[in-house]
Image (cartoon, rainbow, N blue to C red; front, side, top):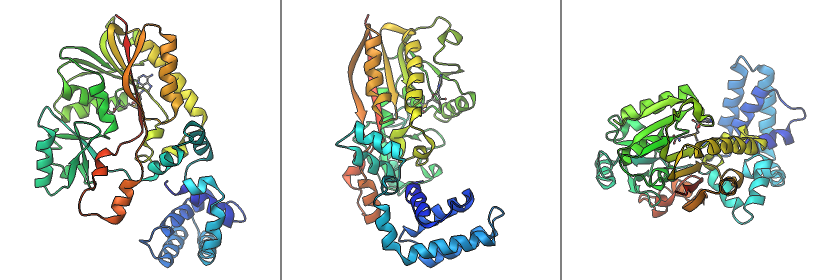
Length: 391
Ligand SMILES: C[S@@+](CC[C@H](N)C(=O)[O-])C[C@H]1O[C@@H](n2cnc3c(N)ncnc32)[C@H](O)[C@@H]1O
């Protein structure tokens, strides 16, 4: 997925006719492997031809086609690489509309944001501070031979030098830690929670932020999501972490179906969005989205926010969160909300957090034995606005 723009462009340049989808996918895969120093070109060609000839969706003819195309590419590699330099999708490995959008939204930072989304992210953990301190958990990791350091982004976050299966993490099964990016770990602290408060997590599944809220304070929490299957994951997570909260299926935009007259001191609105800030973790997102999704998702988020506002007590706080870098879903959404609701005050908040650069990738490539400090500041792209209701 991090190479699909280049692969698509090479196929367009090299094939006289568009190949069937399966052949196309096998070629993208082969081109991505050819770009890696880890594989010998002859082995990539040989294995691709063999795989496609044997597969029921392929054939001997498919094998011949793929063989000819890959060999032609390898014979004239520098020529084809020069051709690619003229195609933004091939250079950046994002759809054209995504690149243009970031260029216009971030004239200074668009290249940085695109590069950050192509880097391999580190594995970041949230320490369950109900069970132990972050420092204590870092010591446990060290004792288990897992290199890690404290994040400078969030107080509960720990960044691993190299990813490990969760079963290898000390205390994972009994809820000592969860996997969660450092930027996502800012939601619970930004809610400014007090013991005993009525708290609504309106778009809760799979429950990362729900659990963090419950790890932070004893409160009356309602976790809502309109997707029942995803909601089950919230219950599973709370069970592993030994936390309790009420889980309920419902549409956040229609409180009459679930609120039963309740009003809340704090509301977390982690609204559905394009997820453009987390493409480094979910590399396929960029290819699955269409540009029209931005307005469509922002409009649906707007309906949710307006409905939730009616459920917030005077003096209460609503936290708008999205894992997007498109301003229409963050900055503009928050600004429009305050214009519509004269009883809303925007309090200081991180606002748009841009994903960090590709230093982590460089770190992996250079295989440093010490953990560089810059790992401490790595995080996904996120947006936060804290909206207080006048008393
Ligand atoms: C960004 S995810 C939430 C991630 C979650 N807060 C976490 O930290 O693990 C957005 C969630 O909103 C839910 N959702 C979308 N539209 C909704 C609606 N109208 N009412 C309630 N939930 C909705 C989706 O099912 C999805 O689980």
